[in-house]
Amino acid sequence: MSVFDSRWVGRPDFVSELDPGSLPSGFVAGGVAAGLKADGVLDVGVLMCMAPNVTSAARFCDSGVLAAPVVLCQAECDLQAIHAVVANSGNANAATGEAGLEQARRVQVGAANALGFEPRQVAVASTGVIGVQLPGEQIADALMGVGSTLDGGHAGDFALAIRTTDAIDKHAAWSVELPGGTIRLSAQAKGAGMIAPHFATMLCFVETDAAISAQRADRLLAAACERSFNRISVDGQLSTNDTAVLLASGASGIEIAADSADEERFAQALDALLRQLALLMVKDGEGAARVARIQVTGGDQDQAEAVAKAIANSPLVKTALYGGDPNWGRIAQAVGATLRGTAPLSFDIRIEGIAVCAAGAAVDYDPAKLADAVAHDEVEYEVKLPGTGSLAEYFFSDLSYGYVKINAEYTT
Image (cartoon, rainbow, N blue to C red; front, top):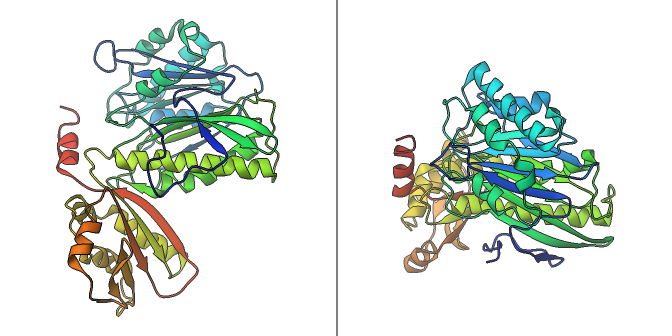
């Protein structure tokens, strides 16, 4: 099945889809069962780049309560030359204090010893329940000898090991035709809940066999994250653990030079890949039935961003979306609550291209046509504020009975 299953993100015509679990040259991956979940269930993923001149870049959430692996990576990893990633599910290792930091370090050192790297060359990531100490020694023991078991052709076990409440696979592999030659690009991600428009409860690991400087990799990853993982909402809740890492092996021999046609195409492919993975997170939104896009134009950029974010995070808008209820008053309320003190505000609302509000007042429309429009799997909302020149876009899921059940029973 193609990873491109949304009308909102198109596959570039210079991209060909491969087996979604395949890896570019220079990479191996796998998963182990360390006992964080049920017996025998893969819960620790290992990704390794064997190329000696690997370059990398990383992005993390900025929560005031950062998980221990995020703190460790930011403080002690060489983020421009990461050779391996070890990511566990089943335990977030967040709000665990100095002891949690030491447990994350034990995993890092254990993985480094098992794979033959320096600890600073190994990034660690965690996802799962907050406030529970991570059994670092237990994970390190499970990683002993893991290097010989890693698969050079497939990342399926790695992608499976990092999942928590995910019900949808979120990994892809592409062949990308650049002016300078063909390279490969792949990614594995997880995320379904605790997702807000500023990263999400998400992990994403991206690999390429192109040669990219660490500085350009950082720039490209930052831009792609801003248009993808920073533009999605399931429940408006900021995570403690968000991590995105890009690794470049250079094994293809094709260099992505700064400001070149190759870089332009590579950036387009990376952008499309991460946006589609972000949309899959929204689609997977812990019981979600529908997804939506909100586009806000007009106003200044800060106003447009604030309004779009408010709509994407609104439980009233989300529940209306879930019920297929064309109650555009929920959107009007979110606009007004965001732009306080601006009444009388002239704004327009369209749902699936159907005008329902103009200059701040209701207009005539066909109720049956509107009801049909919001009954589809994807629903598009548009808000126009006074003025021109600004545009903000967010993707979000509905809020369902399933979401309440999953999160009501998350630790029990």
